[in-house]
Structures are given as structure tokens and as C-alpha cells.
Length: 119
Ligand code: F3S
Ligand code: F3S
Image (cartoon, rainbow, N blue to C red):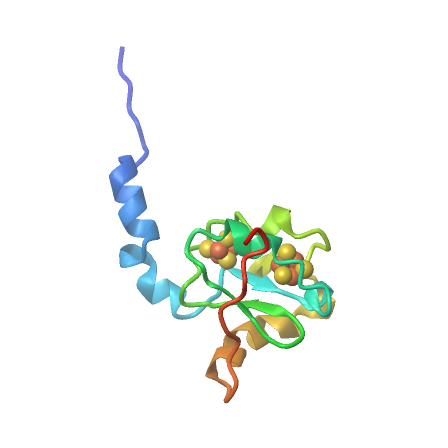
């Protein structure tokens, strides 16, 4: 007879994921990053599925903007060379790419908007 739901209403969840409730937390971490396997491959399937267009292109590889990524995870399974990881699951040999995905946007030549693969 008693049903207790311990989940937030969908609209609250949406508001939270758009930044409000997580903004402080997100200043200190990056949900998803692109690592070495992207170098000189640049398949761009990730670009086509990202709902907020937060994947940018540099000369050798693409990067995820840490302040724009909403942590949806849509890009991860699309990459044919498994270059995309949640930050905490990045393989040890590619941990340096966590800082790289953040620092590249502060550099003199930050990555730019890529072309969508399907366009
Ligand atoms: Fe886009 Fe992937 Fe983040 S699809 S929002 S870069 S997790
Ligand atoms: Fe690179 Fe994979 Fe995207 S190769 S451009 S991370 S789909």
C-alpha cells in the first residue's frame, strides 16, 4: 500500500544537469576527455552526437571543452578507436590527456569548431 519514490522529478534532474546544482563541482573536474587514440584519426563521429557541440578540433586531435560538456556520455560509444573516456576511467597511460583537454583551451591557439562528419 505504501509506495515511496526516492527519485527527483524529471524537471529537477534536468535543471541540475544543466549546471545549477553541479556548477561548483564541475569547476574542479571534467566529465569526459579525449585521449591519444584520436591523434591523426579524428573520426569526428563524436562531434555528430554531442548535443551541446562542446567537442573542438586541433591540428592532431579533438578535445572536449570541460566547462561545456554536460556529461551525457553520448560520444563515448561512437568513437571507433576508443579514445573517449570519463575522466575517472581514463587508462593510466593516458592520464596526461585529462590536463591536456583542459589546458588546450587556455593556450594561444585553442582548438576550433570542427566540421560535423555528416555534413
Ligand atoms: Fe558531448 Fe560527450 Fe560531453 S557527447 S556533452 S562531449 S560526454
Ligand atoms: Fe577522435 Fe574518436 Fe572523436 S577518433 S574525433 S574521439 S570519434
